[in-house]
Length: 209
Ligand code: ADP
Image 1 (cartoon, rainbow, N blue to C red):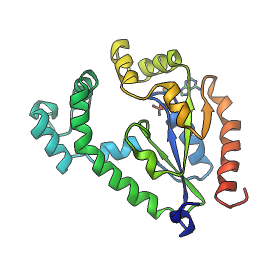
Image 2 (image 1 turned 90 degrees about the horizontal axis):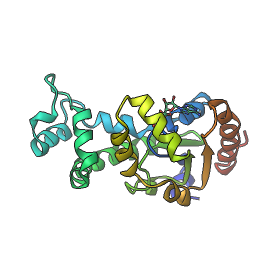
Image 3 (image 1 turned 135 degrees about the horizontal axis):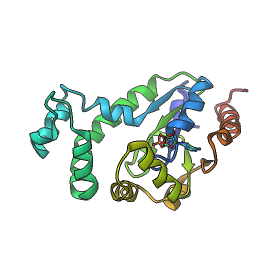
Image 4 (image 1 turned 30 degrees about the vertical axis):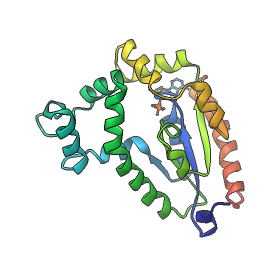
């Protein structure tokens, strides 16, 4: 058992999965069961909200053309740049990741539920898996992931393919997972899987369901 857990902190489950694999869809089901969940995407947006030091650093490093007229980050434009240029992606991450990590740690250490969930697409790639006790991966075949990404974000298939390629592969992610949710099938197939995992996590956390 982790020292944090022994001190009364929550067991931390890292929910991961490629972009559009279904992390939010699965996460919502845990939230409906009363489980506290922090979405890493929301934290990533918060740290660059104007006015913020990270936003200023991005404008200084990449150019003011990555800001919208209202001063907010032009996320689509920056996304297109960093997904076609790995060096830029690393530079952007060097600005944002330390701030994201700090906010996640603050949130994690404040949780007092039996367990909580941290949802991060690039959990392992970013090294943030070190902040969690156990990894839950949402798994889908890559063709399904691509189809759902194009549909959800209304983007062209080549960009969607680049976004998928910039993350860990399906097999790399599965190799690191302690638990897996299969999201290949219609959403109704998720509830029994989520219920089973909820019971498992309460048991590991030392609380009966
Ligand atoms: P993530 O949070 O991993 O990026 P989402 O939960 O947003 O992924 O899911 C991506 C898209 O696929 C969303 O539009 C969602 O509504 C849809 N989706 C998720 N699960 C399923 C499913 N089992 N069947 C069909 N569509 C799904």
